Amino acid sequence: MRILYLEDTVADAQIVERYIQLTDHEVTIAHDIASAWAKFADVPDLILVDVLLNKSRSGYDFVREVRAKGYDKPIVAVTGLSFSADIQECYNVGCNEVLIKPYAIKQLVELFGKYLS
Image (cartoon, rainbow, N blue to C red; front, side, top):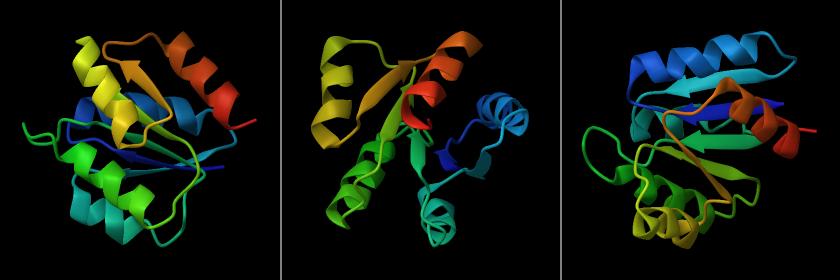
């Protein structure tokens, strides 16, 4: 399966990338919205998106745009925002699930099992 991970923090992206390299899945990392759109041509089976990109909430905008263009596959918000209003906003813009940072690798494994089986 193809996974697109939009994450502006290199260390966070590397953790996910290293894990996925141990699986049969492929991951493409984008550090900003422009590069995510450039890499979207090979439509992913799952999108992971940090909703706080470069200290703005532009990850929410990316999810809205992707959904508006008809993308109907799973999108998971990966965020450090843990207030209920922030989590609800993730669902409001079109995310299927929210993974709160810091998370355990076990949570990532379960997430992939749920959406990529």
